[in-house]
Picture 1 (spheres, rainbow, N blue to C red):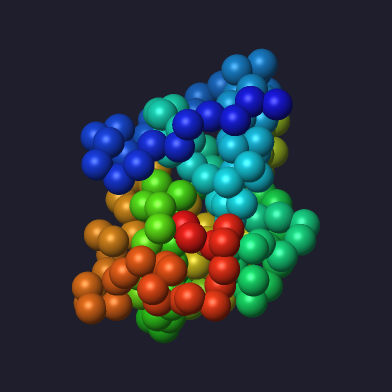
Picture 2: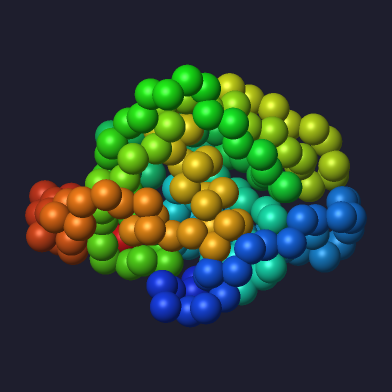
Length: 179
C-alpha cells in the first residue's frame, strides 16, 4: 500500500496539461493505479487524478462501493479507472452544486457542471470504456478530468460569494468532511 502526497493548489504541477498514456497494461501503469486508489481511499476522496500526486499522465480514478463521508448524501458512483478520457456534454443543461477537492483542502465552492455527459477512454489494460451519465456521477468525472487540463474547480466558479471553508459552510458535516 502506497499513499502518496496530494499536491495542493499553488503547486505549478497542478496547472500543467497531462500527457496521454501510450502504453497500457505495464507494471508502471498498474503501480500508478494502485497508488491513486490507495491515496484516494486514505483521503476519503470521491476521485483522484494522476497530476494530483505529481504524475504527468492522463489518468483518473473515481467512485467507490460505499457512501463517501465527504459527500454523505451523494449516490454511489461505480469505482472507475479512466485513462485518456474524452468528455462530451449532452445538451445545454448545467447543474450548480457544491464541490470540494483534495488539492484545495478545507474549502468548498458552488461550481457549474454539465448535468449529463458522455465519457470515453480506456482502462488500465487498454479496454475501451464508454458511459453516459448524469448528476453526481457526471460532476465527479468532469471534476477529475479537469485536473488533466490543469484546471482546479475554483477556476470554474462564477460567484466567489459561494466559496468558503467547509467547517463554516457546513458545520453539521463533522470531522472527516473538511476537504
